[in-house]
Image (cartoon, helix red, strand yellow):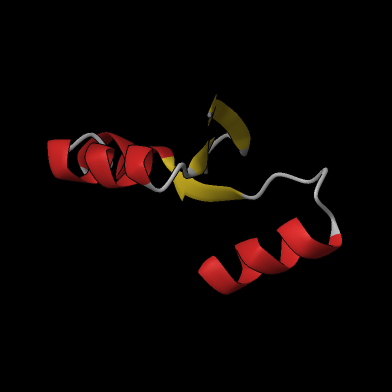
Length: 61
């Protein structure tokens, strides 16, 4: 992801790169304290998707 993120910063600085994840994965894995810390320190943007209804449940900046 770092290479893609750097490429976007250089070529399209107005864009933001979001990591799309299933809602169930977000609820089970991304809520762990260590994972939350990694997300914050790396300033990752998340898009949480409900795959059953095909709807974006959350945008997390």
